[in-house]
Image (cartoon, rainbow, N blue to C red; front, side):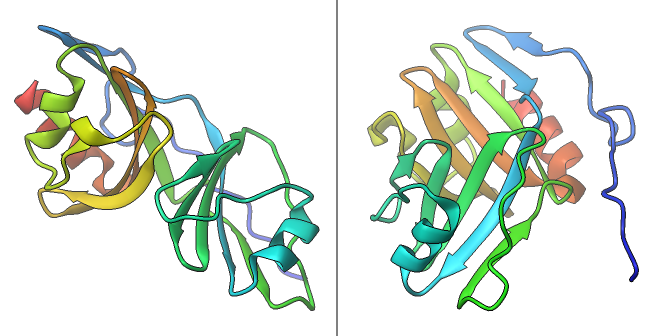
Length: 171
């Protein structure tokens, strides 16, 4: 059986600074490492039974590190090293996407201003805990409000340097 080891890239490999960018009223930093999973199921109850946890029911809701992105799609950001059962034989998809994406943290009194400089959504109206797929300029992101003045942004690794520099320029 062929096994593929996950690719581990550092900030230096991606031309990203290891240190946070601090500007007037905002800070941009790489987020902690997470185990990332794409979860898909037409029947959420089957997936909940497999995972042993409740899933958020409405698009945009989050619950214990899981965001509902669509009627049958969730993104899980769990502690690094977390493993989930694959659900073989069940009508679900549990896919480890830890190597596909990484996260940025945008925080401070100007966090909303920075994100809305390139995002069409009014993130100022997001309640704490809301997470949704959107774009920053033309790059697909998932933006998740984690506190009043703190957001977590997920982006595919291949777009991460561009997004970092776009956010840094806007800051």
